Image (cartoon, rainbow, N blue to C red; front, side, top):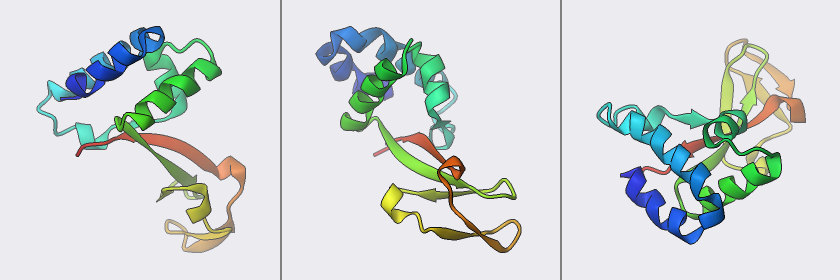
Length: 124
């Protein structure tokens, strides 16, 4: 499924084709397990850098932009709480200045260091 979704992107972005093929191969490994693992895939930028062998952060940004624009992945932001749990938000504007840590039942101020981007596959 995702190999087919990635094919037009690979054709339209020949300079980025190798990195996109590597991601397609990675996802195909999960698809071969029956596809039940696909909704659980979370890719942080470091993992994507390794999978696609981006080489530089600028190249990774280009690859991520292609994947987001092509509706292959969607960005979410995870606020890491002191308890280790994470709260998911769709944009920086959605993140309040203070959140409740569900693991400790306390409030804490959200700092930039607590916010991690992560990407999920678009499954529709």
